[in-house]
Amino acid sequence: MTCLRDGELQEYLSEPAASGARARVETHLASCMTCRSAFDRLAATNAYVDGLLSTLVAVDWSANTDRALAGVRRRVEESSRRLVALRWWTASATVSVLLVVLFGLWQVMRSDRDREPAAIATTVALAPSRDLQAQTAPSQAPNRSPSPRQVLKNPVILRATEPEYTADALRAHVEGDVQLEAVVLRDGTVGYVRVTKSLDKTRGLDDEAIRCARRWTFQPARDAQDRAMAMPVSLVVQFRVNEQTAAPPGPRPFEDAFAQGAYGPDVTGIVLPQLLTQRAARYTSDALRSRIQGDVVVEAVVLPDGTVGNVRVVETLDPVEGLDDEAVAAVKQWTYLPATLNGRPVSVLVTLTVPFRLH
Amino acid sequence: VTAQEPGSDRAFEALFAEHYVPLARTLRRLLGDAAQAEEVAADAFSRLYCKSPTLTAIENPRAWVYRTGTNLAFDTLRANARRERREGAAELDLRPDDATGDALNAVLVDERRRRVRAILATLKPVHARALLLASDGLSCREVAVMLAVKPDSIYTLIARAKVQFERAYVTAYGRAPL
Image (cartoon, rainbow over all chains, first blue to last red; front, top):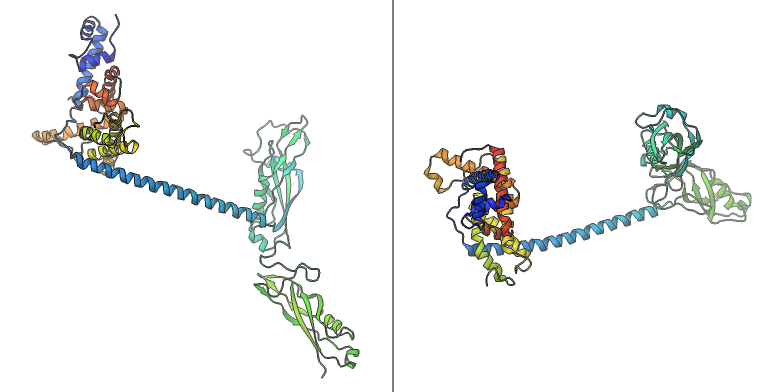
């Protein structure tokens, strides 16, 4: 005889009169103690739960259906409006974000294209470091047996990113080398890096050297069994200011042979040189006899040290009797307080007039 | 046109006319607040309209709206409980019948209502929904129709729901005499 299921017992409890198998349930309960016990438990549960749920008695309450329906329609309209607004907002936000991203990419691409290295910074040495092997912190050191393995191949640099000058270091014209000790791991990446000889702690070149060294990749060292192994190495990073490209932004200097590297006097921000000592041009005897008078106009490059470099005649007075040459010779002996651009002495091309007068 | 003839906007109106008040009354029992119950019932019907204005996209709109309405009511119940915990004592949910007893009895009844609602909110939604509708005076077969459950399964569902409810209530508050 099959025992009764919970559903059958509940049906008998809930609607005994309508229960289709009422007779079978009653017969079974009379003979099966297990089902009788389950039935009693379920009946007690029903009584307890129904008693608790009866506290949520229904109240005599009704609602205005028409007013409620109007409220529902109003809700639907508001919801539709919100949905439309949300879609517009989402579309606008998406387009805006897209435009911002595209603009950012364009700016990055443009800056990359226009960018020139302001400094030369390279690694020039790569040698195994014995000191670091002993000094590397335990957490950084590779965890392996303490017996040293024989190195067959030293690490080889595969990719070295160029460090960049910090603005402060470039302004201060700091040049020199940073010596580093680093651990080249078995996967070719750089693990532990420290500075062994500092170049500049305040303007960030030491940190820049470390930052760059951490991004370098190596072909790892190999032992006698041709297995990759971690290995400490010494690295040297050079920082040299590139005079050509480290110049302040703005108009570029002349590039012809005569005035190479010199700025024009009309460059924005340039402070023109000031004359300190001047040697007067002398008449040649032939010019004096010929009683030649007038001006020789020359162009001269005033160098950053205040001396005059190249000089050339642009308006001649006397190419035959020697006054032009005398003017050039005189100007070459003049000295200046040099021109400056953004506080730095620079070469500048100036136009000078050398008068020749008879008294 | 009735709720059983979907395909037009009037099908929705007929369904609303037939079931808004019963649903709101059921939710009123659960929430203990007439305004909140009307709000939640209206919300359920507006969601139904947004989902399918002509009721053609939903297989059993009546079961759908009851399911959505009770789910929203349970959410509201939990939010009310959180708010009450945050703001301190809540207002008593007193009924006209409660006024016939003394004040202490009214407070005790109110406390029991809160406990029952709190336990309902912790049950599986289908169990809580079945208990709520069954205690609303509907027959088990009517509950099966409202919940879109097979008639053969409704008794088992209700039996399990009651066992779960009793277990949760006794665990939380002890077996208090009725």
